[in-house]
Structure formats: C-alpha cells, structure tokens
Image (tube, rainbow, N blue to C red):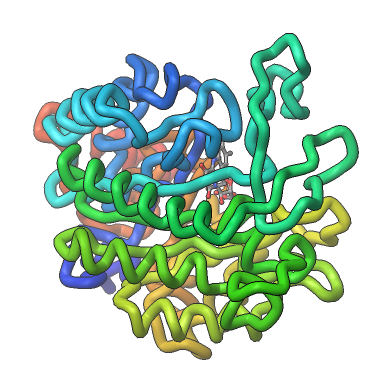
Length: 366
Ligand SMILES: Cc1cc2nc3c(=O)[nH]c(=O)nc-3n(C[C@H](O)[C@H](O)[C@H](O)COP(=O)(O)O)c2cc1C
C-alpha cells in the first residue's frame, strides 16, 4: 500500500510532491521587515525537511501591519532583496519539486506588540510603539491599543498594498501566495461580527464583512495569475455570536469562485473568551466541513504530529493536505520519519540519502 501522504497533489495548476505542508510560523527575527541570517538558516532547513509545501511566515504588506518589530514584511525594496537572498539559498538545497509561498498579512489591531519572548503584550511607550488600525475601534483586549477604524479609501489602499506585496513575491521567486485570514489579524477582524461593527459596505452582512478579503484575492489573481493563491481562515471563533463554520463555507465558495485554490482551516485568535478544545487533530473536522460545504481543496492543521494520524486524515478524505508547525520546529526531519513509519519512499538530497536506513531502523525500534 502506498501512503497517500506521500502522493503528489496539484492545487491551482501547481504540483506539490507530497501532502505535507510547513505551516506559517513567525520567527520575530526580521530587521524592519527584512529576512536575516536566521531566515536563511530556517528556510534552508525547512527546504531539506521533505515537506512539499513551505508556507513562509506571516509577511506583512506594510510596516504598521507587523505584529512586532521583528516581523517579516514585503513592503520595501530591501525586504524584497533580503527575501530573495534567503529564498534563492533555500531553493538551491530544497528537495525536488518543493514549493514556497509567503503568507501575506496585516496584523491590524494586533500590531505593535512585543515578541513572545519579550512578553507578547502591547509595546510600551519606551518600546517604539505605533498606532494601530482595524475594522472598528475595538481593542483586542484590555491593555492593548484601541485601533482607529479604517476609512473607506484606506481599505482600498490596503488592497493596493497587498497587490504590491504580491508583485514583490513574484519577483522574489515564490511559487504561491497565502492570504492570512485567520487568528484575529486584519482580514479576520473584518470577517468577524465581534470585531467588525461597521455600517458601510465593509461591515454588517456577511457579503460586506468578506468584501475586503474577497476583493484582495480577486486583485491578486488578476495581477499575479502565475502564482497559485490560497487563504487561511479561522473557521470558527469557538464563541457564541462569532464567525462560524456556516459563514466560513459561504466565504470559501466565493473565494473559490474568484480563483482561490485551497483553504487552510485553522480557528480562533480573535477574542480571548474563546473556548478552544485543543487536542490531537482538533481542527480536522473544520477542514472537512469546508471541503464538503464549498467543494474546495483544504489543508488541515493543529496538533497533527503523529504520522499515522496525518496519513488517516488524507487517506480517509478528511482533508487534502496537512500542515504542521511546532512538530517541524521540534523535528525538521518529521517527513522522513513519517515516510519510514508509513513505508513510503521519499526523495532526500543525495548528500543525506545514506541516513535513511538509519531512520527506518529507529522507527522500527520505537
Ligand atoms: C512559533 C509559531 C509561529 C506561528 N506563526 C504563525 C503565522 O505566522 N501565521 C499563521 O497563520 N499561524 C502561525 N502560527 C500557527 C501555526 O501555523 C499553526 O496553525 C499552529 O501552531 C497549530 O499547528 P501545530 O499544532 O502543528 O503547531 C504560529 C505557530 C507557532 C508555534
């Protein structure tokens, strides 16, 4: 039996060698949005991991859209050159047919924060904070800045900024783009009735709340049709009255109609009152709901660290791909281990090939 996890998949005309994705992971190690040597090392390491799809961390479309001073961006020529340097190096060592894409984003009201290891709270006056914006003037939580509600023309301008970051992504040499519509960042702030209280064409009905995300996706498809486009959403907010799976299905249908090729199905992050039942594969059913409801390829994510669980998700048709974050930080050879566990063959760099039998022996012993 061949493992489905190691079978290729084509999304929007782009072929991936297997169904394992690296989930986007902020490294908080950029310099005014520019990738540093940390990214060079990190992307090269992930390129050799065996995962077929590498989603580069949240990459902000403007300076004030960064969560922290260390967040990655694609808003300047320097950002573009630095990303190209790191991506060229990663591609040079990548396993065959591995594809890379940035997760374009804006933190909105969750911007101007400290790095996780500095406290993760709002930047203090002596930490060079900046004013934040959102759909409505509602802070994320106590002690965080109250955002200024964006004007109509500012939202239009933000769509231009996404387009310009997408053009930079193409010049950098990325293969696809993911839009970050999850975890309480700006698109999610518009999607959720809890953070969007607008009464203009960007708020109120679901059609209005999804307009910013949909028009951005549409613009990127038109301007950069060569790059496959996906979207990550928080399918539920795990709270009464929040953005729901039923609404997410409707958004996914519209995104599919404008040319989006996959939805990565995450959850939560927009309100602290969420009641999230975290556990092994706890978001997989959300991916299945989107796939069944909107007939679009989906990526499942969240505590999928067991190769047998990952294989069952794709082989039982619960999702088309799986994305892993923390497991790939803990063990960047996780895909090799999964292949050995599932008895699948996978291509590694020839320089590393002699270690594969050892991996198989370790897996057998465990
Ligand atoms: C260090 C770290 C950074 C993260 N940064 C991002 C990010 O940039 N964009 C995003 O959508 N999710 C981000 N996440 C969430 C992960 O992509 C993923 O959805 C989550 O960690 C659950 O998957 P896991 O159980 O495999 O870690 C981050 C998670 C971690 C641990």
